[in-house]
Image (cartoon, rainbow, N blue to C red; front, side, top):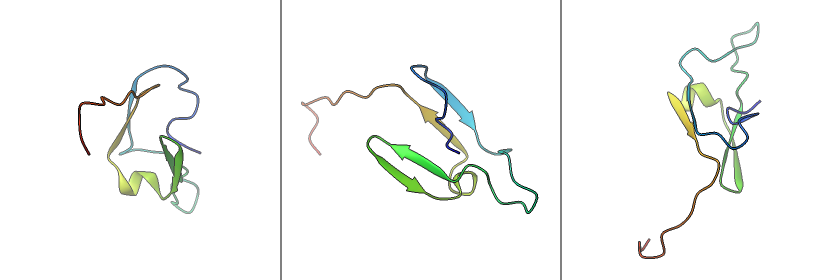
Length: 64
């Protein structure tokens, strides 16, 4: 289960402080997608909240 599941094209801020857990207390949110990659992690232990945006456009004038 991922916090971006089912959001489609909406911007959403998801509070993870009370995220669902199984009977043993293990977080059900066990992965998060960043752009084109996926990170397997107990999401509510790694993040307080997640801001999901449908698209990201790079500003080519900003150097990284």
